[in-house]
Image (cartoon, rainbow over the protein chains, first blue to last red):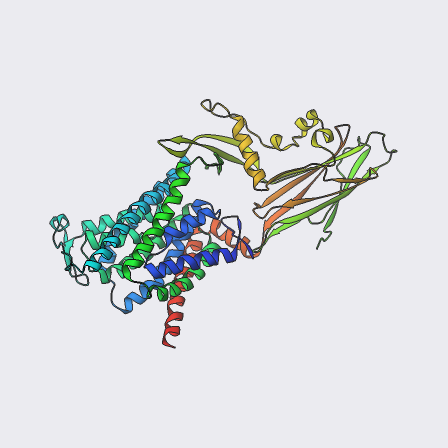
Length: 305
Length: 252
């Protein structure tokens, strides 16, 4: 069944979109990531204009993270205070990101920037995760002692300290703000929630306990991606509500199936599979940049002066 | 489902020409609905004449054009090992859709001079005043527009697709692809003899988003804030619904 998307102005197969949403939803349920970093490149591949893909994906992440955060609120694993600090940084970052995005769009380089961001971040995070989980598997075979915990690093020397009860932390608000700004910029440019950067940063940089990390990250992602959606809708008119709804329905169902599938696998195996997946997406995008494209020319609308 | 919506008469046609076009369209409105996946428009007509049929054979050239808009064409080049957009050329006006149907090979149906005057062929339908000085082969940019849009089915040259019967009746069909933009699609019909235009007729096919498509598009342009808030509300409602629904499922 073909469906004509009113904003993207292309006609696509509705079942293909539902299927894509479902597949990414399964992965996101299995691995506990938003899935935006997979969905946006997939939308590029099926011919959705990049600007529409990025803006619409932000809208879809609002839905999936809202669904996730409700579960975490019931389990009381959301640090609302930390979330608010991250959020204030995130909003600043999102505003900066949209400005950068619009500037590059007028320069005709937005495609390149989005793709480069993807290649760099997917490459780095994919390989780190791969190495980390290989080590974890090796350790669990040797049955080595518990890993050492670094409690104090340079982060704890900064001023403007604040107490975060749920996370059991007493640290400066500067590092969480910085993490928030960085993720906000990325979410505006890449159309991702930024969970795959936020989660490692909270664990390793801020030293938050793992059990509150996912909920807190989801909490602030709702607001940052919500804000990004609004900014894209009002400045670029690129949010396609029909596309968002189709992806969302598939995604929400897929996520629940994925959560069940995830229980059959070990944590390290899951992480290795996710790492491989991330590296594969990254390699495909990198090849597109490195190999000569079959069509050297591209058409774009003239920016109004 | 080809309904005859209207017959348009060539009232304004020049009184000098001995032959006039009487045209019918299977539809003069194309509605882009939610499940729109292209449309086929049947054009048919007759030649009205008071004098006997001239000896030279009659040819018909039909050009359907979408709304024109300026375009930026960018070319990729290898820089620092990766392919990036470098040179850009602005095309002043390129139609979003352009189909030419003729009753003979194009160059036989209409002469080069007449093509130049009426801007019928695809390259002539694209208007490009000038490229910046630093771009050497500006020609290749407008060629790229034609190549890309031809591949997408947006530009079509359909030679020998207009059927003529007894120099009086003619018919053809134009395929409109699914990725149409909305607007007025001026449609021109030329009657030619020996490559010269002897009569000309013009009408408009209207392409419009309708229903939900129309409403969403207008809302996103006129009330972007409300549209944005609505998108968010839908997202949040869906997120909440999913979480609630699966909790019920888990309990059972």
